[in-house]
Image (cartoon, rainbow, N blue to C red; front, side, top):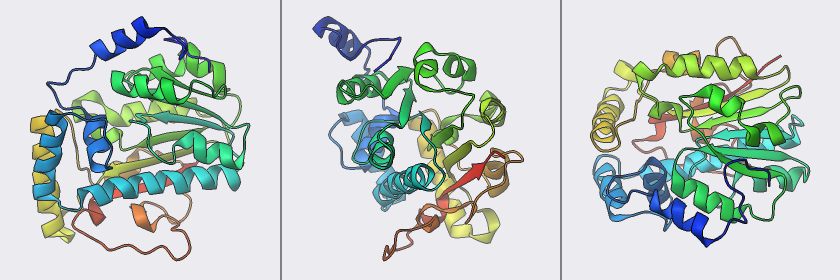
Length: 285
């Protein structure tokens, strides 16, 4: 594992330093998602936000699981069908079953994966998980500073930007506020991708007047997230499509997560969040 920030073999002092940076008095996006996914790496404040969200959207955990299932299907497709061997996962969140490197390396053991996150608890758990994996690393950086990611020595050690890359932006751009220019950020990453690359993303979605009840739920959830997490935007279909720029989306386009190439026999029950979480994959010719 080639990580310029901190090698996973660091001593107890390094781990203690990472733990010291974890603020348990404020909710963490990664830890709230962990709560929804049934994980144990969350604190009382995270569960408080999670429980409040459940009052608005009781099927929020199902939406979290749907996002992870979408990620796994996308990675499997890109590794097995598109032949991608490099994956850059920004805003990766806490490790859970079916991580990108597990899915990709099951298809292609030589696949290289870089996880990027700015949450110290993610870095701590990620480094522990990847201690024996020389083809995968986790680095500390923030999506709001694309150059810090694209030029990071840990990223450059595993990702060759002269060869096709899968850029994964799952459940991250909706935590970039409008004034932080999420579309400019996405454009910078698209620009950095070489020909043959793919951009995959999932995003909170507000369907607007066409689905007034769902739209109202999305507006209420957005208010809750911004009051408690400081970020969270349920954007329109047009706003989300703009992240792909002029890159053509592969079939079936931008759709509710369960509808993106479901596995044979897979069934899903549309709940209140079904139309408020969408995803898609685009190819850079």
